[in-house]
Length: 96
Image 1 (tube, rainbow, N blue to C red):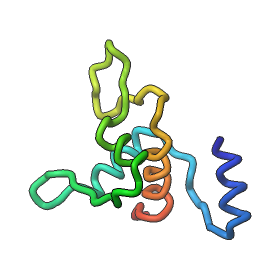
Image 2: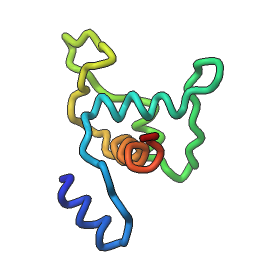
Image 3: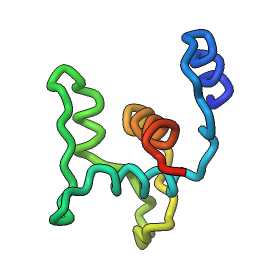
Image 4: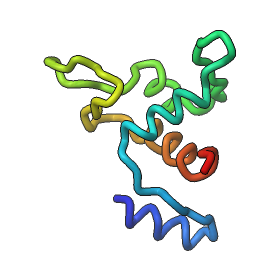
């Protein structure tokens, strides 16, 4: 999937550097970006982005026996919009 996504980015003339990363690292980065000064997470999403809204509200899914540690990888599921947001954060908003 990542190779296919890189191909689409190249065709659209969108630079995609440093896309390969651990899912957990990307989630941590994204959560840090949307945390306000009081430690609350808030992000404004346009109402027309229904899929992203649904995914954000349901969150990543973890295995039933999961301890949900910060370093634990979530299960693969219906999280493609969240993954796209995570990829954006990793490529564009990450500080080197």
